[in-house]
Amino acid sequence: MNIRKKSLVLIILFLSSSFLTGCIRKNRDDPNTEIRTLLHDGITRSYRIHIPPDTDEYSALLLALHGGSGTAEHMEEELIKGEFNRLSDEQGFIVVYPDGIEKRWNDGRKINNPVQHIDDVGFLSLLIENLTKDFAIDQSQVFMTGISNGGQMSYKMACDHPEKLGGIAVVASSLHESLYMNCTPTDPISVFIIMGTDDPLVPYDGGMIWFLNRNFGKVKSINETVQFWVQSNRCLQQPTVIMLPDSDPNDGCRVTTYEYPNGNENTSVLFYSIDGGGHTWPGGGEYFIESLVGRVCYDFNACDHIWNFFD
Image (cartoon, rainbow, N blue to C red; front, side):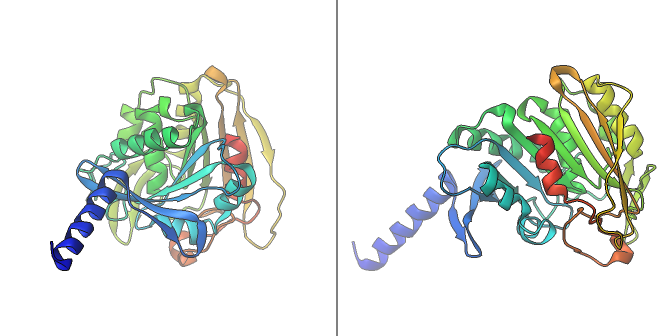
């Protein structure tokens, strides 16, 4: 066999191995983050995985889903500014940032959903299954969080496969109407919701989602969304109400927390209402102009509070 043919065979073998076992390459900016792929439904899907150093035992798995028009890289580095990676290194859990197809998740909405043919529930389920096996993680210690479209996808996973998750945390998203009407979880699941009263995209009191003159479907109010999970888990109806300290008086926000404990199988529902908050990640980056997405609240860091809720 000549050199050219031998090189071609090696390239084919490498590509075949990559598609079967998942291509792995390091992130140049963070040596503890790898970029991997997974074949699902004939489509090569990508995800970023942050593995804490200096440990062979991992306490949990956290999947963080970007919003519509976002990416895993932007979620990890710009929106949350690497905070989950920092917590991962401190606490010994693994963080995974999957990529949606065409920068979107198929959360079940039909309006303006170019990826409604994509089985994202199947992809995320397979990803969880593979990673829990690879890293010997207890299924009850698998958690999911997401913002906006990524939050809707987290709701859908909790509706369709609550047995695969120990809890979800959703930022800037209430249940869309179709999911609200058809969600029948077979198991209780803890839910943490963070929502701004001045979100210009997802209306706090429910209604149509509009962005750049495009209609992205109708959502229930945040109160209806919270009550859905309170009743689904059979938590106490009377919440414990606490106002967080106004740590940043210049951000134009105040935060009130509502905790509904004692649900079935020790589940709970936690709701942070951000008076003055926008379609943003608290403590995170200002990813778009304020006139379109609203204010970022800096009275708390959502990553810290989400992990405290899960932990």
